[in-house]
Length: 373
Image (cartoon, rainbow, N blue to C red):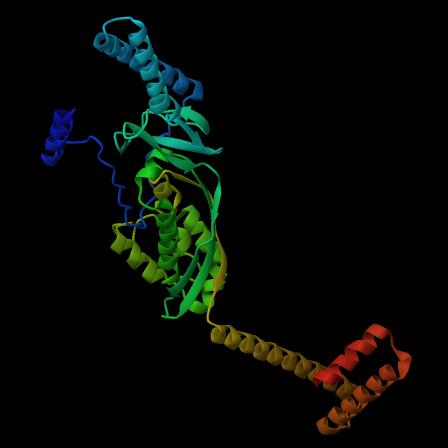
C-alpha cells in the first residue's frame, strides 16, 4: 500500500498523475459581441436510473466481500468457526464503509455530475433522490439545480453617446441544460450577467441619453439576437458610429455589405456554451438622470403652452374676421374688446347656472389655472 501511494505521488510530480487530484474550474471566457453561431450545442446526457446505481453497488460490495472472505479464511486456516466469524465481521465492515456510506442523496429537480478520482466526468448524470456511489475519493458528485431561474441584472454607470450616465434593468429567464458543461465553467451565472451588461452597454454607447428610454425594445431585441440593419436603421442610433463599431468588431468587412444578413448580439448562443438555455431576455426599465428627465418635462410643458397659445390666437383671429364681416365699420381694437366682453358674459352665464355641470367644471378649471375657456 505504501508503494502504491509512493508511485502515485511520483507520477503526480512528473505531471502524469491524476489520482485524487481535485479538478480546477474552467475559467469563464470573456463575453464578446459576436455574430450568432450556427453550431449546435452539445447535448446533455440523460440521468441514469437509480436502480442501476444500487445494482452496481451490490455487485461492487459482493465482490469486495468475496475477496475479503478468501483473504480472511486463508489467514485463519480455512472455513473454521474462527474463519467464518472473521469473514462475517469483514463483510459487515465492508458493508458499513462501502455499502452504507456509498448511499448519496440528491435534491429533487437536481442532478449530480459525477467526479471520478477528483475530476468531473461526462459519462452519466445522477438523478434526484438516493443513489449509490463508491465512497470518496474514488467517486463523488457535484449537485446542479435544473430549476428555471430569473435573473434581474441592475446595470449602472452606462455611458450614452453624449457621455451621460444611465442605468438599465433587465430580466433573464434561463435554466441549466447541460450540467456537465455548467459545472466546468467558473461562476456561469455571473458570467451571464456580465454578458447582458456588455450587450446593453455596447448599444447604449451609440444612443443619446434622452433617447435611451425610447430604445428599450431595441435593447430587448439585441439580447434576443437581431440583425445589424435594425440597429443601423433605428431613428435613435448614431448610424455612422454603429457601422464603425461593426467594422472594429469584425462583424462586417465594409459598409457596403447587406446588414440584414449580419446577425449581432444575442446571449443565447454564448450561454449555451456555458451549459445554459435562455428562455426569455428583455430590458424592463431604462433610467436616465433626474435633471435630464426634469428638463424634458419642462420642455414638454413649454411646448404644450406654446401650442395652446397658438390655438387661442388662431381662434381669436377667426372670430375677428367674422366680426369684421358683420361690423365692417369697427376697428380691430374695438372688435377685440367686444370679443373679450362676450367671453366674460359667457363665463358669467355658465357660472350663474345656465350651463351643464361638465361645462361649469371646465370653465372653473380654466379660471383657476389662468387659462381661457
